[in-house]
Image (cartoon, rainbow, N blue to C red):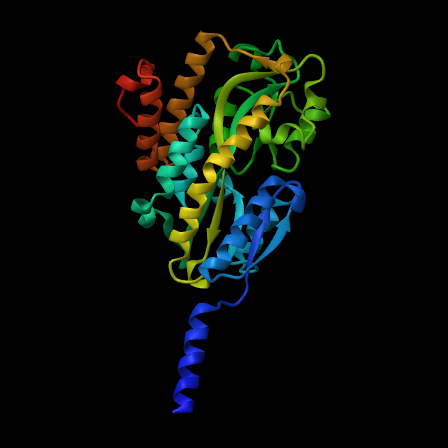
Length: 332
């Protein structure tokens, strides 16, 4: 009898306590960064879901991804542009020009994390199963120039642009704008801008102070008030290494964090000095929108973006700007 009770107790204990799971966490600032701190909060919350997580900080995103791919970690927190290979649906929130303000971004993330989409957030790649456990906003990326006279498409031709080499969308837009593309990593694109190696970058407000982008802007630079891309971060896990139902609980937690997340983004955007902010002409704004729309359609056809998410984002944009030219067009 005692033996039976002991076996039952061991069985119950083994189903409620999981071995410690390593999670690779990318943040340019390491443990002191906002992204890392957010993942720490997630790891603390995960204890209530019977998960014991060991966070490993990385300031090199490529290394974090590589260690995840090779099994050093069974979870990874990284930008969605890199994480898109594990889940196209979630990764497509960052599609070229698809999110034009933070309100649309919050709606898109909330929609993606909704339980009705749980089947879209689990994928298989080379026999390995992956699940999106959380999505958070990094921010809308705006164009920064060292010379504010580079304020039209024509004036940008031939200028050097630091783009993230692993993002096919950025490479495409660089080519279409006839810029000179300089392949870069998230860890060095701002350095190239600051030291004059490139003339143009795209970055969210999150990067402005930590990466000291004001050095590159100097006294003659500008930030154009036209978001070219939205940036999010994903937590990707191997679900078989986590307690059953972990993903659903994690995503529910992530949705609850969004108001605080977007409040932080708004504060960071407001902190950028007004002297740098410059408006594009309505003509150029329209031309950029059309160019990015064409790019999104092509990239969706190539399988880079998820068509379901593209339709969701278009509906969201047209709910805000009903008179926008694209709202009467098909194709997305």
